[in-house]
Image (tube, rainbow, N blue to C red; front, side, top):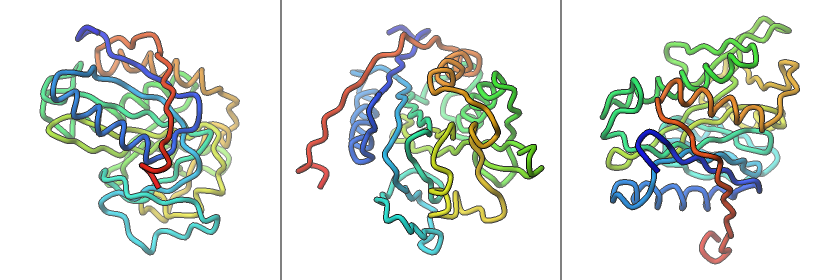
Length: 236
C-alpha cells in the first residue's frame, strides 16, 4: 500500500459493536507503530445504540431494549443498524491527507463532512452542515424540514483517527425514536429510502470511494473482504 493509495475493507455480515471497537483500537495502535495500513472499513451493525462522551442518560429511551455501548468517541447518542452504511476511518493525522493539514482535528471533521456531501451529490442530494449541529443535513422535500442523513463521531489516539461516519440508506426509521439523536430534539432523521431513493448499498459504496479521492487525495484500493469471528467469552 503506497501513500497514494488507501486500503478499503468491507464486512458483509453484521458486525457486533464490541468486536468493531476491539478491531479499530488495535489497528489504530498498529498504524501508530507503522505496522498497519491506513484504511476505511465499511460495515453494518445489528440494531444498537452508542453513547459518546457528551451523551445524557435522559436522551436514551430504548423501548425495544437494544444493546447500548459506550463508544469513547465524541458526541452524544447514535443509532446503528442494518441498512445504515457505517464507515470507520483510520488515518495517521500526523500527516496531511489531500487538502486536510496534519494535526488539525477540526479540518479532519470538516473533511469527513465534505466527503459525505460529495458522495450524496452523486444521487442528487444536497447535503449541508449547520453551525452547532454535527453531521450532514438534507432538506426533506415532502415536509420542507431539515433532517439529519449522516452522523459523524471521531476518536483520536496519538493522532490516529478511528470511528467515523454513519449514513442512513434504508435503516428501520422507528429505531431512531429510541434516542434523541445526537442530543438534537428539534430536527428529524432522513434516509435515502425516506427521501424516495432506491439506492443500493453497493452504489453508495462506489460513490463514497469516488468522493474519497476528491476530498482526501488518495486512491481507494479494491475493496478487501473482512470476515470476523466473535469470541463470546471475550465480549460477554
